[in-house]
Length: 146
Image (cartoon, rainbow, N blue to C red; front, side):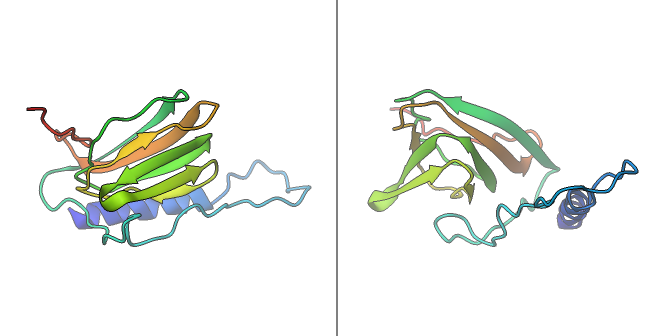
């Protein structure tokens, strides 16, 4: 299982780093590869760990939140990557920890930790979210209401 995930990650990295050639040379300076995140821990310094059971499954989505909107208190059982495409997101964690993520920032979200995201800004926030989970299992969990 881990070998398949490592192979997939390596393939993605190689594909992303090898530019397509169309017979033309670049005529202007530009940053061909822009590193976003290179980490071994989550935002709360938890070590990253991949699923040990089941078939690995990667899902991605662009989440849009209007000003004042909240995600609702939830957690992720597996590593979840986020990239702020536009706007600003404030996330609160247990113990009064509050983090603000702005356009252009990448984050490995906390695992198995309840948190709530809120758009406190004046414009919509758009987030590219990549879930690294297990086929057939939820990648976002909401606590049961009594």
